[in-house]
Image (cartoon, rainbow, N blue to C red; front, side):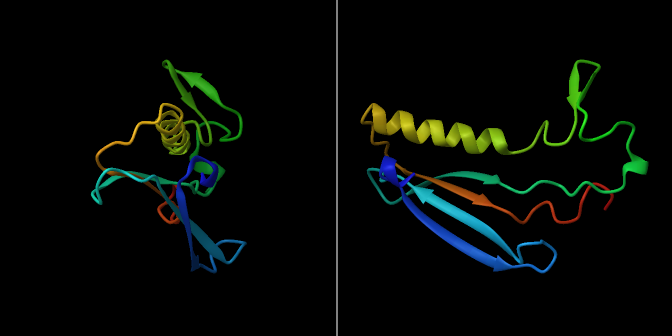
Length: 117
C-alpha cells in the first residue's frame, strides 16, 4: 500500500479469545482532492469453525449445491479487500485523483461468535 502512495495505520485491540492475543485493524488512504472520505469497509477475520455436528457438509471440503458453493470462506469479505487494492492500484497507475479520499478500513472483530451463536 505504501508503494502506491497510501498512508497505512495499524490498530491493535487486545482480545484473549484469539491465539495471538490481539486483533489487528488497518486503515489505508490515498490522497483525494478534498478531505471527504470515500470508505471501503471490510473485515479480515473468519467465522470460527464451530460444531461440525450442526453442518450438513464438511466446511473444509467445498461442495456445489443448487448452483452455489458451500464451504469455509467461500463467501466472505476477502473479495472486497482485493477489489479495493486493485482500485487503489488502478487510480495510481492511471494517475487519477478522485474528489474524495479513498480509505480502506479492514478490521477483525465481526466474526467472534461463530456460526452456532
